[in-house]
Every structure is written in C-alpha cells, then in structure tokens.
Image (tube, rainbow, N blue to C red; front, side):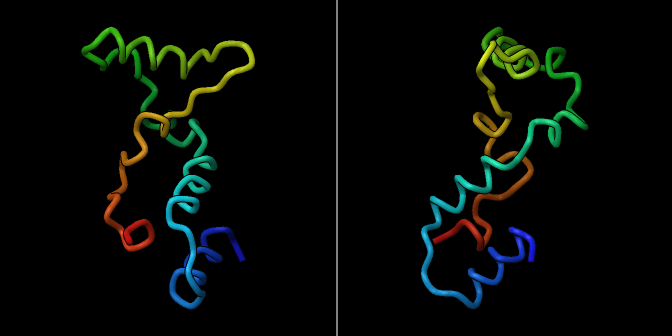
Length: 87
C-alpha cells in the first residue's frame, strides 16, 4: 500500500491521528521538482525583490541547505479545507 493509501485508510477506518503531524510529513515529501516542472520561470514573475531572492535561493540553494517551494507556498494548488487536513 502506498503512503497516500495508508493515509486514506487511516483517515476513514483508523483511529485518531495527529492532523498537524500528518500535514508536516506530507509537505516534507513534496520535491521542488514537482513544482518546477511547470513553474520554471520563477525569476521572471515575482514583483517584489524579496520574492526574487527567495526564488533564486530555491533554484540555487546555499551549500548544505535546501529551501522547498512548500516552505512558502504550502497551500498552492490544494485547498487547506480538504477533509484530510481539516479538523
């Protein structure tokens, strides 16, 4: 059974679980490549210098560090009010 299959099973048939912990685990597993597949022009779009700097650091992370798209855009493309993450 896949990770998502286990989550669905646990949500509907299992007991209580910690929603915030589950949300963090899901977000940790979303790779930047999934976002960058479509959003490859990150440096052309932001209007603010801060957004350009943040996107540049995602594209060229500092040595020993990694920034993830979901660090700032955790709800992008997904409604937070879904049953999986709602209480």
